[in-house]
Amino acid sequence: MFRTRSNFTLTNITIAVTIVMYLIQTNMSYGGLYLGLNMYFIEADFYWQPLTTMFAHGGLGHLAMNMFVLYQFGNAIELYRGKKEFIISYFIAGLITSILSFLYIYYIDNYVNLVGASGAICALMGYIAYIDRFQRKAIITWVLIISVAPVLIGLPIAWYAHFIGLGIGFLIGIIRR
Image (cartoon, rainbow, N blue to C red; front, top):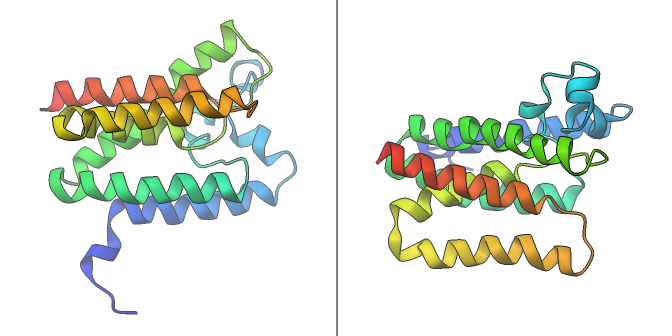
């Protein structure tokens, strides 16, 4: 209702863009395949996929959960470390996570279509885990739970993207400290 400067963070803008991209994805034929990360990346020259996969999602629940966590961790980094740190820890780390996750797809499971911001969000979590040692164990435990538990019950999640993102975020924290 009241407009404040804090509503216009890059994190909140990223969330809005992600929601718009999800709406576009769901209203185009094969939107998930076109915008997700899969073998079309190299077989059909879909070079935009490492970026667009961070905006594509597998459903409203997936989107809502990711945007909730992005809101928490993205705004925390932006508030305490600045917009530049958010861009580096989300977009740059997200792209690196996408490329490294593609190596998993390429060498281990060619039939994967990777969608979601989870890898980039886990990079934010890894960044905070490095910066704030008091939260480190809880963050690492949480990433383990959200990565392993769904696999154990048969949900098709990109656990490797979570671990890669966490590691990339931690590494960025080391570099940027």
